[in-house]
Length: 243
Image 1 (cartoon, helix red, strand yellow):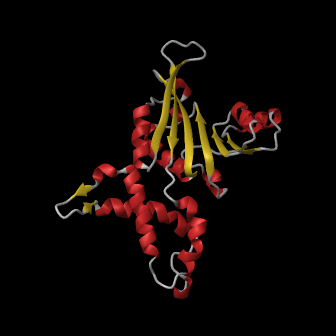
Image 2 (cartoon, one colour):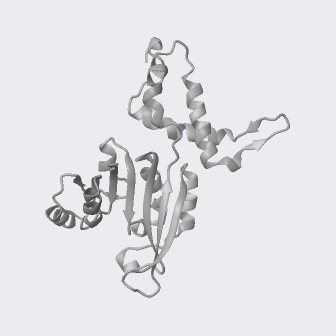
Image 3 (cartoon, one colour):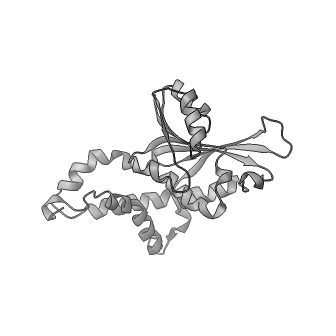
């Protein structure tokens, strides 16, 4: 079925146009104004919405207040400086729907520094995925289509696990109207599920058949999960306690 796709670094709009023909709705992000205008002229499909924005902030995309089934970065990641990649990856993950896919193509080989490129690797993506509660579902290598010596490509699919947040609408009535202040139990459960998906190696079984986790990890994961809700003014307490 039709998906909502975010195409970052859309360039001439080639990929966005193909996705639209397949029946998907696309938000095409391109920071270069002249290139973006030419792409709009070439591809007038109503399924494509054009936006001027760039990594690592993606401020304009975040202001849309939506999340995406698929985020595409085709030949973009090597232009993100290494010291900005953790922040950029975090921004991307927060824009994905639970179960969504981040599709990245990596230009491997000696980076062309004159074109603002930096070295990239699949190993780095593995690390970033683990740190942000995602995982690499698929990776593939291919030769350079232009036949350039020393250049090859990796196609990587990063999956964000569905940790149950997709069922939030079903639980909303209970969370907001329950007679007792037990919503923290759901919050803790969600936090532990995310840790189980992304940092299971930090769990230790003690002599009493209990599982020990670093409190700092629980606190950090909790903040990452619920700070966006606070910023969006979503109620955190049952209504009978004043909201």
